[in-house]
Image 1 (cartoon, rainbow, N blue to C red):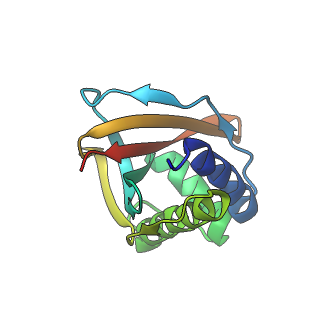
Image 2: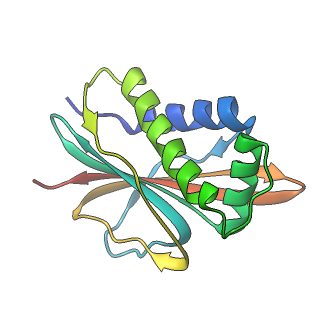
Length: 154
């Protein structure tokens, strides 16, 4: 049985709403080609192990992430704050945990690994990809986040 992308989409929507009072607009998941490069300011990755192996990668640009983290923590944060990376990893951890509750498929998952660096390239394992783009409006600005679900080859 396959873990459904839909489980992660539902978990992402509920996590952002409950933790940050953010109503995400989530676009239809699309296939993502390995040749397409991923560049972002912060990324967090969790490995999933069960009947299949997946990598779940959350990505965001600096300005969008700062807005999210400030809504979650109620504190003013800057790009240099460690709270930014810690909260990003925890956000993905909660999201994956919720996806497991939604999914009929049981799985184990690793701790998140978070990388922060302006316009860094996210390296992913070989596999088949789904990409979920989401955004929210804050102070009239569109803020994007991304979620990549990679079904890795064994």
